[in-house]
Amino acid sequence: MEKNQICIVCGTKYKDMTKELLSQCDLETLIGNKEKVIGIKPNLVSPTEASYGATTHPEIVAGIIEYLQEKKFQNIAILEGSWVGDRTSEAYEVCGYKELSEKYGVPFWDTQKDKGVLRDCNGLQLYICESVEKLDFLINVPVLKGHCQTKITCALKNMKGLIPNKEKRRFHAMGLHKPIAHLNAGIPQDFVVVDNICGDLDFEDGGNPVIMNRIFAGRDPVLIDSYVCKMMHYEVEEVPYVKLAEEIGVGSADLSRAEVKVLGKEAGKELPVSRKVVELQDAVEEVESCSACYGYLIPALEMLKEEGLFEELGEKISIGQGFRGKTGHLGVGNCTKKFQVHLGGCPPTETQIYEFLKAYILEKREKRK
Image (cartoon, rainbow, N blue to C red; front, side, top):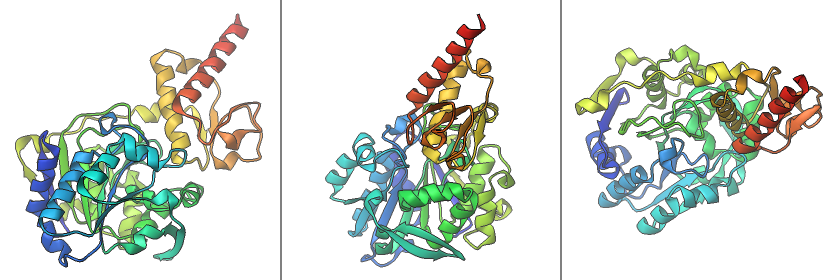
């Protein structure tokens, strides 16, 4: 498989589809030496089943493992670290990876437990998880989905699971886009298998799955993410980390040179346009917030909107590390603990935020009577 190629397959037998896809891409030849240590990096952002639209279907990883083991590759590991606020160990069980690991005899490395190793990532010093140092070949298995802060998340952003929690927080203080691009210079992806079975097109932590029953693969994560931008009806320029990654040599964003191979008519069907987040973001004053905190706030606002309460909010909600030590009126998360009205937690859950804001709105309503 050449770097400018993307191969797509569609169906409902996910494990078999994955094996067919890897055969089409001739992954065996790409890896080469049978003694290489191969890492498989899914997205287990939180402890929710894949049908929720946030995490990688274990059947896809099972297909990758079966393909590799049938080709006599034996040094295989799954590695991942959930986002700040959730434990990988819980996602490991809930998402079906404990069963998967035991069935195939493949170890699972919880990167939340790793020490950070400082690495030069094309001029930006970043801490990466020590497990990455053990790998000879990395297979990234992200979920195609929306993101409250970066519009899309797929191949490039999925690498955040391979940095320590402390570094994840620092990424947000740096503005997300630049460190995501540079991280991918420091941790090269050798192959990408994208789970486009039912990703949520708005929220990183799922809840509104859009069923497509599709998997696709390629070698260039920048090209993959550029293709995802197109699929989700965004211009590449609207997702700055994609172009930044191209500029520092991670890959190519030039879709005009991409060769897309579609296996079956259904594999080429179009994703719907979804922009729920844009309207909800107007109610938020966000400065350097972590993905989990912000990722729980936006769905909570959607719940308020569905109840007809969102429009009564009135004030903007402050959230993020940029509000530490500052005062204000309405805030969410421990970083806003000096605000007049605030909800603690690092992060508070979606339900906690929803109940807190609902109570705030109803109290305001009572005072107006």
